[in-house]
Structure formats: C-alpha cells, structure tokens
Image (cartoon, rainbow, N blue to C red):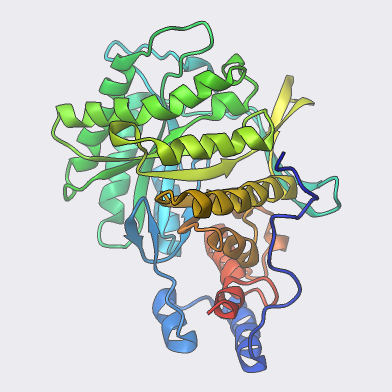
Length: 404
C-alpha cells in the first residue's frame, strides 16, 4: 500500500530559504499592494522586481501566469468571466455542462442540479491541519446547452488579446456497471457544437476541453467497478477526438481525475492508465485531483457530500510522490497536468509544481470571506491573487525564489 503518515507527501516546511532582502521586499509589496492595489501588469512587475518569470502552461498552451479558476459556480456567467480577466487570471474553466445528443437527451441529466445553497466552512483534518471546504447540493450546468454555447463564444471574444485562456468543461455519458454501450451521439453532438462556438468570431485554434468525472465522486454506482473506470479513461479521449475529426477541428483532451472511493493503489493505477495509453486513447493532459467524499454526512436533505481541505491535498501529494517514483522507474513520457485540490497558498501551489504541475486551479480560495484577505479592495480574485503571490510566509514569490 502507498498509504503513509499524514503529510508524508509534503516537502516545504518552515520558512522559505531566501535572503533577508527578498523577504523584506515581499513583505513591503504585500502591505503596499493591499492598500493601493497591485500593478496593472503583475507579470512584468515580478520580472523587473524579482527576476521572476511566472509564465506557465495548460494543456501544453502557454499562459501568462499559472493561476486558474476551476470549473464551478464562479465561472457560469459573462460578468464573472469579465471580472476574472480584469483580475489577470491565466485561465478560466467554465462551469461543467451536461452533454446531450441532437434530440436534447442527456444520459447524465441527474447532475444538472441547480445549487440551492452553498456553505464555505472551516475544516480540520484528523491529523490536525486546518483549512476550508465548500459544501453544496448542486452539480453541473442546469441551464440550456445553447446558453452554455453562447457563454463559451462570448467568453472567448472577451478574452481575446488579454492572455487569459477560456476552457469548456463537460460531463459526458459514462456507462455504468450494467451498461454495454457508450452513447456516442452525446460525444459527437456536444463536442461538435462546442467546437462551433469556440471557433466562431475568434481565431481558430485547438480547443482544450476538460472531461469532468464528478459522478464517481458523488457516490454514484458508477464508482463501484474498477475495471469500468479504467475503461472510461481509455475510451473517452478516443470518442472526443473522433467527434472533432469529423468536423476537421482539433481538441486537446484533458481528464479531470477524481479521488475514487478506493485506496491509493487504485488512484495510482488510474495515473498509470493515463500515461500508458497510446494513439487516440491517450489524453493530451490531465487535472489532478478534485474532492473527497463523505458518504455519512448530510447536507440540505442529501446524504453524502464532497469535501476538500488538507486531507485532500495530503492525499494528492502523497500519490503524486508515488507517481514521480514510478515515472522515474518506467521512463514514461509525462503528460502535462494542472493541479487542483486545497490550493490555498503559494506554498501549496509550489508543492504541486515540484511534482510537475504546470498550472493551478482554485475554487474554494476565491470564495472566502473578506476578512481572510489582507487586500480590502477589488474583486475576490484580485484579493486572492495578492495573497497567493505576496503572503509574507506562504506566498508563491518566496517559495518559487527559494527553489531557483
């Protein structure tokens, strides 16, 4: 078994190993930007002041910085997208849309549930570390597919020339333990309509797409069969790619890996399948790894809820450490990947980067109360970025420079 003591996957403890001069400059910037706002072009400032280039990648595409908004209720309308572009995010993953066929049929319709209520809550792991989690009842996009296509098109137009990448997220059909066939029409129709919206009024380019697996996370019976889950990972890229080929378009397929309700060994097996798949079955990138599941807790009349916090990042980092060792032993060609899971500080982001992450997706950290941010002006995204970069003990600037 890979299971080790809590925190065994972490590497960065204590204080960042940087000069006192750097430490004082970061503290100065933390305080003055909190009161006066961050520079208009923060990436240029970091190069000029610290010699720090924060350019990054997502799906092999260049980003101006590594910070992104993960799919969820914070990226489901144009005003939210506009605010995040103005704040300077490197990428924005739109709310997950539920795939449908040409007649409007949705095999995963049970996940098109509107968020009636959401709670941001403190959470403490069994090993004592504290953090934050969000609990909610809803799951995917509950409006029409046409409305989602309009959002994708308009978001692309709004982001043009800003350096912010827009990414659609989709929940396609997943055959359960008692199903023998895939609903290929859902993959074909949904992918081709998304590509049509992606390429309308914007320069043609490969469309990155995230395949969301949250049904397995939410305690669905689809999470019960290990062999079927591994089949999903091989078949999904093939179906999406073939749909794009039919309309002479290109997609970059990313699978958003879930924390399955099994042990660490199976989680590593999921990553093995991703890295050993070949041809059409190989993903272009992956996202690792969102949410844990508590089958006993009840929220808003529903038993079983997903949660995050330090248990999530601890498990992710532990498994990623094992993946590093396995990749070294086998000589696998690493896939590009984007990190998610309890990223509440620059230090935590750097932990993921040390294991190969080329970008970071956050959701909970953009929803904390105003008292949790030192900056008292601007949007929550701007306030969160200020903390992520310049916090005087946990900021990304410190920990990135400590490893330079």
